[in-house]
Length: 459
Image 1: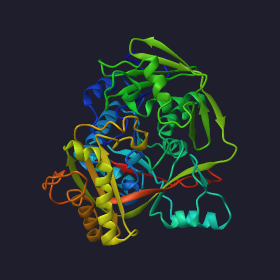
Image 2: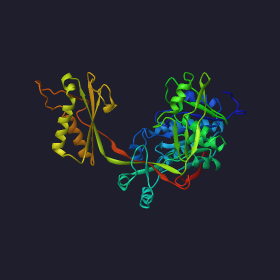
Image 3: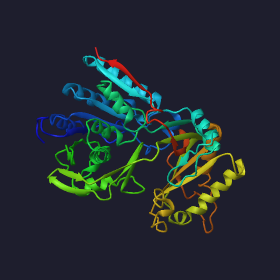
Image 4: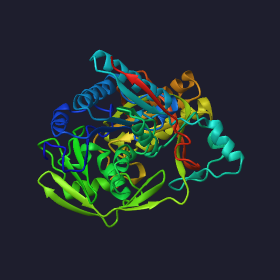
């Protein structure tokens, strides 16, 4: 890449596919800064963490990791005098996570004595009452990916809702002169598409640009997480380059990532429309860069914003049970059934949840595991007990774990039991949550649910 910003498209440097989930590798990020990007941008959100962070309004990772990544981005962007954009703050983009990121930016700016700059942010959290009112008015809250439309029962089970923003609050904050933007929950691609659209680049290319950049080095090979990539968009194409010298953005790696995490590998949806990538052309531009063309933008007939909701199921304890005895392994389902029955003897059929994940047989894939009938020579069973109170959850889990030791199998002559325990006690874990909403709601204005704010940071 040239070291000059003239005679080129818009370049965005993405340092990490999920800010804060594991620390950014700063070596390739520094190489990216040396290539003079126009913007430094990163996504910080994911549903991959499960519903727990949203339901409990917490982060999935330590604050120190998020501060590490924000500090690297902030210092690099301010040194170059280019905008910095972070979307879906703190994994979920709730109001409290946005506030936390704003506070971190202000603290870092003061710590490093940075000259004053404009700090913009927007909220995505949605009061449950607003959705209830829509439902009461007869408006459908439509389910995604085969879910039924939302009901009052779904909302009753929901503790927290975020709406997923499109490009619109980012563009508004850039228009208002924000140097650093902290976004609430938003579409991954919107973080990168917004500045491209604001510069006048075609929507199809802009949104595809965002889709490719959002997971950083996941679009490069060989696999190396938390490394930086640089994207460049022009009026006619997109180019993406790996910043880690050992990585390459290839036709296979970039095309593969474009299809990543999609029920339909060719469609990418966002507030206001979708792109069809089915006719895209991927070309090796140089050894570490792939060029992309051919996406088609389809505007939506109506504005529907995606809603993500989560609710608490109960308190949770976890037990870890090991099995090495071949005979016990061959009858592990009977051992689990015995333990389940002892829990039923104590607590009945309802009011709790008891689950067993059998690692070494089908703990990862469950019923989809093709080698389920050929378990390993030793198994690890993770037992989870969930109930409304800690006391009941602990006893459910402890009973469900320890009774595996006492399972009565035919042909057993020994008296020492067929399982072992990593710990005699069971461990308290985070409360169990579940996804309650994966739906869309009609809005009249793409900014309707996403209020924007401007403040200052620096000295």
